[in-house]
Length: 515
Image (tube, rainbow, N blue to C red; front, side):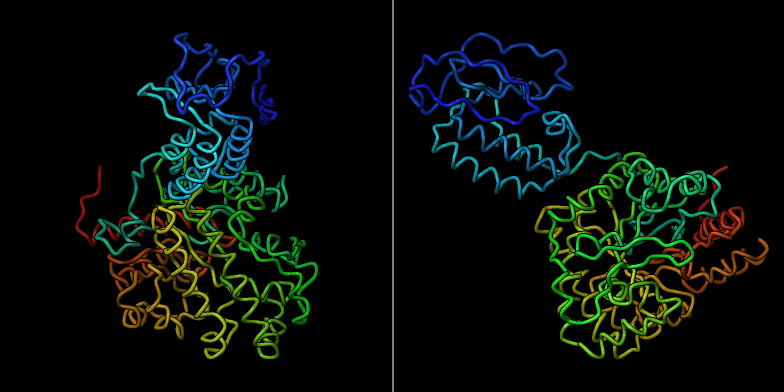
């Protein structure tokens, strides 16, 4: 009987199928005809080339030699759907070539499981492959090729080594909001494009991510994005209002409003935040190993704060958000669990896309009393670190360092967080480095120069930078600000801070400075 014509993706090249002459499924394995496959004009860029062999469609994948398995219509459809699914994952050149468009990576374990399920159907349908030793069927290729994206080698691994507690020849440095309006090259984009356009356009976001590294020789680049980009996947819309900052259109007022909050998984993150993932991948490649690439997310409590308060805490003191915790503790925990699931999925996807370290920003930490924080923030922060690392291990991904920044609360939460799985704890200027070392002797610390110092003459910046390094020491330490670079700061004074950290820490480590 004539088999049905296979259903294939619309973007694949197809050729007319001749009338079949061979009955289907006559042997478990089908020997490839002696003639060579139809040549392809450019094997480096061309996708699947489907040509008939004895009336059966074949998958001609020139990268892997003569790979010409044959399959039934059902199997063809199954594989077509699987490759379409892969369009939401990032896979290196092999699958990118096959789909003619950038695709995201999946772990080998996921590919293995999917391949096993596909193979069961293929075997059931009488899947046949060639006897060539070089040939591998699509499912074998899937397992071979579904690893991480190929990225340039990390030449400057100073920050990664410091984050892992390894010895470093000097103190690494980066700064919160280092990509900002204080840079004239940044303003070339910010003056033309609104904030969300810059965030959601990978080409622009990549350029903004890399600019500070190019100007100052920083040891890390942090992806240009915002902690609130995770709200829309959760079902909460927000926008930037001039003169007011981020504003949520319909805040959560009562527990009944939780029906509007959607659970978020990896697929949701990949679909709705694909622009963040593409920015990470582009930035990782364009950095060419010059600096560590950092991804980030807001902490569960901070995201809940925006969802309930509806705007930033500076002008409101988070009264409504804190009131929600007091008045509806059970609903608060329910919402925090949902947000925590989303944060974990988001951070794992960022690692897949190219992040070499991730940080959790608890920007509203200082708004809570110690007792509220220990109940409504600390448990979820600890859960994020533990689950992210567990997910990375289970998916065969690099277990990258994880950092947390409890802004304004380090003095009373540091001891608790020292018992978590965070590798690095970032400190604001409100805690003395010597006290911080005594409370978290097992952790790498990050921070904490008072940002106000960067408005002062270079001599003062030099003196205060040296005092900070003397107190923290040059090991198990990453230099940063107590909060962030402000748009009104002088780029030259910011550069003086970076240069002083590099030179003074090298001097303390007795590392000769290159001529």
